Length: 162
Image 1 (cartoon, rainbow, N blue to C red):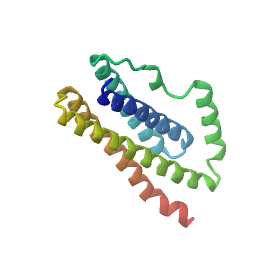
Image 2: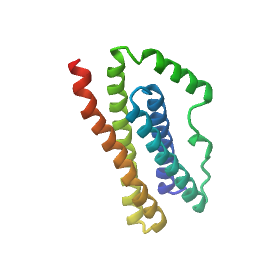
Image 3: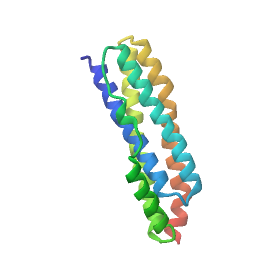
Image 4: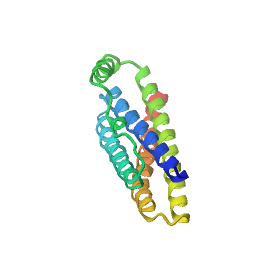
């Protein structure tokens, strides 16, 4: 197994984790409509990245399971939705949103660094298909990170000042 294969495996794991974080955050903060809808939309980007990583890995003779890209199990999803509805009016909900956005930003930053490592290595090793994968997926990860940062800027003053 090459070292690029190891980076692909790590990206697969971290993109799956980012997608799960976004989906759980969306469900946890259903009352914040922009957070709910946008987080679900951009979770789809990470899920697409996972599929593209798996396809790239398979072309290289590396088997990575697609099953990890599934969203939260239905039972867990229902519990999170009910809990979200129950705590919507509580003051701690805003602090929870800020904590989730901070966690999301850090996770997206880590995935962004992984894409950068992959792109640089692929370019140096003249692995054109891997470089193209990184070049096309990385910008969306940067957008996920910027969205989390923008949401922090919007919500922090409201939450902290209230």
